[in-house]
Image (tube, rainbow over all chains, first blue to last red):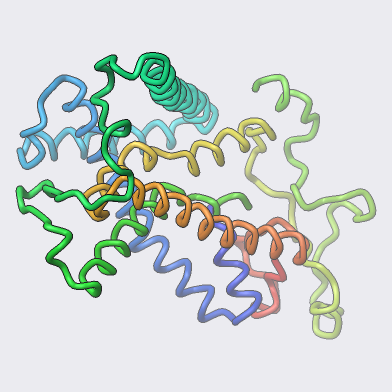
Amino acid sequence: MYLGGVQPYLQYIFGDVFGFLAAWTWIVAVMPATLAILSIVFVESIYSAIGTTTQSRGLEHKFFSVLVLAVMTGANSISTRASTRLNGFFVLTKFISILAIAVAGLAVIVLQVSDPQRDIGGRDWFQKPWFGNRDTIDPDGHEIRWSTLSSWEILGHLSAALYGALWAYSGWDKVR
Amino acid sequence: MVSITSTDNNPQQPLLASGNVSQGQHYNAADNETSASDRPWQPSEPSTFKRSLGVIDAFGIVISIVIGSGVFTSPGAIDTNVPSPGVALVIWVLGGVLAWTGASTLAELGTAIPGEGQCPIKPTPITSQSCPV
């Protein structure tokens, strides 16, 4: 049985009840939700790569997500070594794509600075203020006009954004 | 990756076992009642799990978890909730700082409390003190 470092630490410091609650939350809520999100995101990314972005509510989409989850569970059940090798492949893919994004960004900056008249990469970062408010259209098609929101509402949006950032950084508690 | 794990000549050896601990030390019910809380937890029998992953494998897994697919999914969630790209960058840095506080807290706990960071599956005789981490 694998548990992260949080459960034994809580058990050691605060007692069995808190250790149990941590493990229970982890097994019942956190891990299943994370795996479900990752499977859905995986299939969504594949669909976007093909060029379809309107399928996200389809039954097909859900079926493929469940299939991905089942295949990954099966792979882990069959052999830890095999799934670790698969993991190595995914790490490589991820690093290559992150590197490609960074290189593309740097290339656009260099080309734009070397010739300010050149029309490359949308020119958004070059012409508009970085901290100037821009109206946002969220995925539901609802438009957010930042100048009309109260500071309390803006704080709510910023908290949601921070939560997204923390989701991206999550995993630091798995080292031990 | 493969070369690291092939140097393990004894896969049955528990991860916790170090040089000064005699192998196969078993719990003795008689002396447990007095001194179990004074000394580190000892596995009562050799682990049945085979050690099949090495240091580089573990490192790869952790890197893969932290730099997960979140890097590719979160920009959307952030960008719909911030008024400008500059604020989005600030949110990214802020998230990094928060994650760093958590990671360094766990690193501190990990070095302050010796052991593997995991509870044994099989409870030791005195349950409440079976897991000094």
